[in-house]
Amino acid sequence: MATSSIIFIVVVAVVVVALLVVLTVLVQRRRAEHHRVEAAEIRDRAGEQSHLAAQREALATATAARARAAQAEADVKAAEASGLAHRAAVQRGEAVDSRNQVNREYSRADSIDPDSEPVDAPPESGRGR
Image 1 (spheres, rainbow, N blue to C red):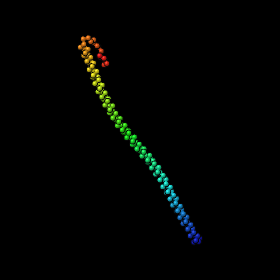
Image 2: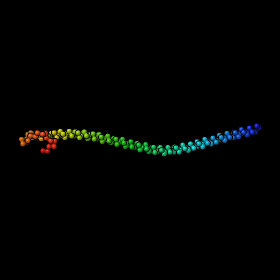
Image 3: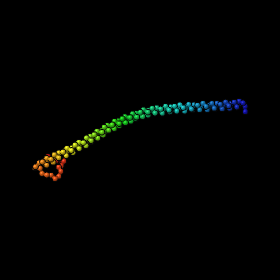
Image 4: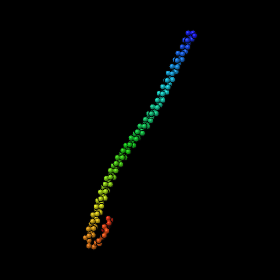
């Protein structure tokens, strides 16, 4: 084989390798650019979703605040109801004592009244004299 043939084969091989290297670099650059564009689109969508997420977080925070306020109001109402129930129990006891006092007065009046007829049954709570 002649020297020129060997040189020609080596030159062709070098050119082929150089073309393969250039093509590989171009493909890698194109792929990298495609990835950059795709990453930018993903970031844009994430930015939009971030805004929506922030709105949802704000809504959740506001709802939680309203829930705490409603719970505080319910606690106040429960305390008020408990106080009213206690006051009603006290008043009920006072009413029973008052009714008993009235009945004792009726009994005392009946016991000293010479025209009163003796009653075998205890006086009714609604006795109307």
